[in-house]
Image 1: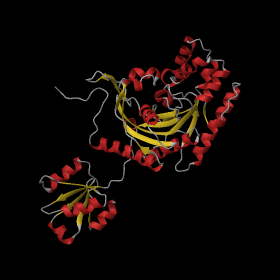
Image 2: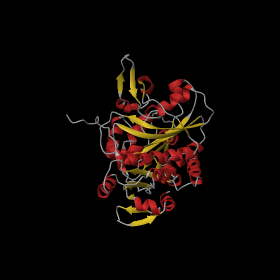
Image 3: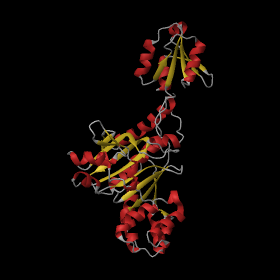
Image 4: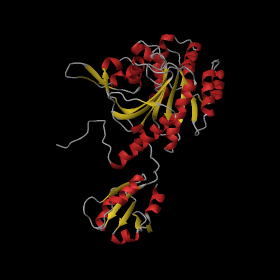
Length: 408
């Protein structure tokens, strides 16, 4: 019988694993630079910890019983485990955390959507200042920028939407329902939204216009004024100004009234990350009640996450500078040379099996090494080694210091 991975999961091998590591390292470097502290949480929790946090998506939780008949579940995201930690430990506030790891959802596998995928998550606990939102978006933006990716951060605010719903005379008990319906715009279109709102007895003429309103706060405010809706945008305007003042790299932000984010625990600003592939690659928002609801501790929180494996599947990464060398030894001891190169941070591999020059070159090519260093007795005597680019065929003779300078 052919061995396969479970449905919706993948192995990562060779270049694909290297690319995934590059993505992970890019965001971890950004998180460290912005002063977030790492945490690690178990991949499974008590099922009761996760249930009641994800609205209609709760059906996607992977649940199981262990041998002690305890009800457990694979983690659905990295936010709820963080909320558990924040509510059961003491930290100086505000606290900044990051977590990188696999999450699991019993979803229908399709392009860009799997049942196991990796997320990178940053959160700030214990502050309601809008500067936290700006810090999160700027930090994520820097991680994308280091991968030469230029996302748009779509932003909305639950308080803004609540004001709109109030002025449209929508019953407060239906606010979350209307948000979930609007959030389906990309999936069911305008006709689908109209149909669902009608089934709930909600007048939709002005609501349907909201899903097309997006841009700068000034533009959105102008469009709402045309609908005779007077909304306080001060919080959103402050956020946009703070993001623009952090000039580490250009960050594109857009206010989008169709954005709701479906999770039950969001209470204020919400975000979504768009890299132009027709599908969100991440998002987040403010969750001021989640930690209290879970642990009874009154702590506010705000966070944002990115799906790392979704980036790998959907975005063509630019090629990184190759500092990898394959060393081909021809009847020559190369251990000292390899050690010297590795001390300088140059990635080295060599022909562990005895091979002639041709077979060694073929092996290096199959292992995706662009450059090989050929060392024979003559090269050891002259201390000039043959550097060959497999793709171009170009050869040059270099000293060890010249090689280090070229690849470091």
